Amino acid sequence: MKFYFHITFLIICTTNCASYMKSRAYDTMDILTLGVDKNLYGASIWLSCFGFGLQHGERSVGYGIRNGHIGKYRSGQSKKTPFFLNYGNSILLFNSMKNYPITKGILERHKSSEFTALSMLIIPASCRRGTTCKNYDYCSMPLAFEFSMGLHYGFRFGFNFKEFADFLLGIIGIDFMEDDVK
Image (cartoon, rainbow, N blue to C red; front, side):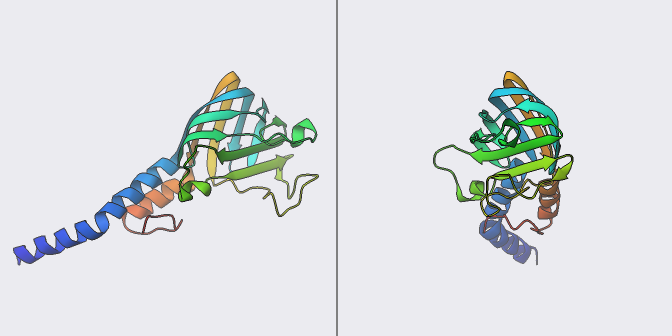
């Protein structure tokens, strides 16, 4: 009896444990945001799609861990639109944020870590003026908290609640985010 238990345990470990451990490691990376940014001025705070702050970061580029991607990322997007409509800028109640991983050799799972968020007067906006709704979601940011602050060089800290729940449920084999390694 003891022999069969050991054989069964060995078979399970050699077939699923590698992908299980890799999936838990990826889920752990998805939980925290820690980064150092350049060209970031001011401060902003976000809770999912709702932001508040006074920040200029449309040309901000950072390095760290953000939404499961470790490496270089862009936090803003400069367009020829009024200042408060450029992603990465926050003026009190007109707030926007963008995350786009730019490290070469990006993994397929990291492409899904891109997001945009735009809120005006604490109400998420449906589209940015001068763009089509096909190109931009008003908020594809996950259920997360993020704080950023800087004076040319800055830092970014965040915690993703949805990925934390996915990590905890993943321990017992439930993957509601459907992002585990197969």
